Image (cartoon, rainbow, N blue to C red):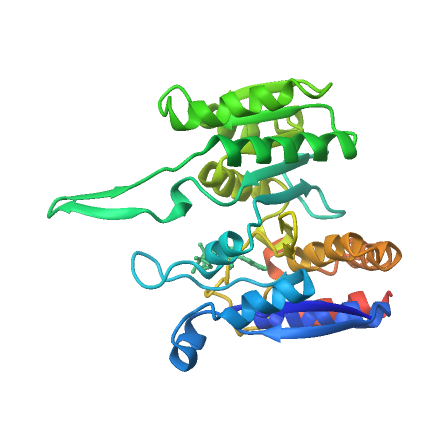
Length: 329
Ligand code: NAI
């Protein structure tokens, strides 16, 4: 029996987490879920969007599965997601991105791993008003955080037989901050027998759209990592299939790349694949490799049978898609 925290989130969060829980249960893995709520609804009852009990639960269980939590845009409370990553020092955001069977995309053979620094950059939330006309946000980059994420990217690359790492910056313009991130990657690369390639983020976006197969592991600071992750998701069929994990030295939180998708929430339309692929990685992480394989096989077989949600051009609901996966387990 594994003890794991489940953060159900909001928007499509509850629908996709219920789907994934049912599939995991049907696979036979025994998990004791510690269900925690966070976000706007929690503020009304507990006064804060991310109560201590959520952090304590992840600290106790070490592992969490999380679905998206809405962040108010241009006003309101700070992102629960960013807070959680900072509080638990989940410094590496790992987003493997590859084609799934029978999901129509512009390119075949996409196989990119995005490694995004998860604790600093513009996400440090250091903003202030200078005068009536001016707001400033501080882009904070440190050598220690840059070196540890570079080391994570290289360790991951070695362990997973990848060929090279590409560090992505705008160091021609942000000479000090991005310059430090680049310099840190160069320093760490010296300890490995793998090449480090370098590219500017604007060119990287263009190259990804024109020829994604030229990339292997991408190493990026927080903001570029966020944006490029969505671009990479678009290469493999969209946010409905893009998986992710936040990893630190002590804890790991597995969650899809996408947000709470308010436009389709509560309509049984959401694609649970991104959340399920994140959960499969979680199962691998806790040693339930066989169950992970079994679920992945059932998911891929469902897609191959042309049973797909609307975001992938299909017509089945989230619950029908879920039941089809379960029937194949
Ligand atoms: P989003 O990822 O929620 O949605 C973008 C588009 O993708 C929408 O058209 C949505 O319907 C579609 N989409 C996303 N996931 C899908 C799925 N599983 N199946 C089918 N279609 C899907 O991004 P958006 O609209 O920018 O953000 C909405 C909210 O989510 C914001 O408050 C944002 O801050 C939050 N957010 C939370 C994240 C997290 O909890 N880790 C990550 C990203 C955004």
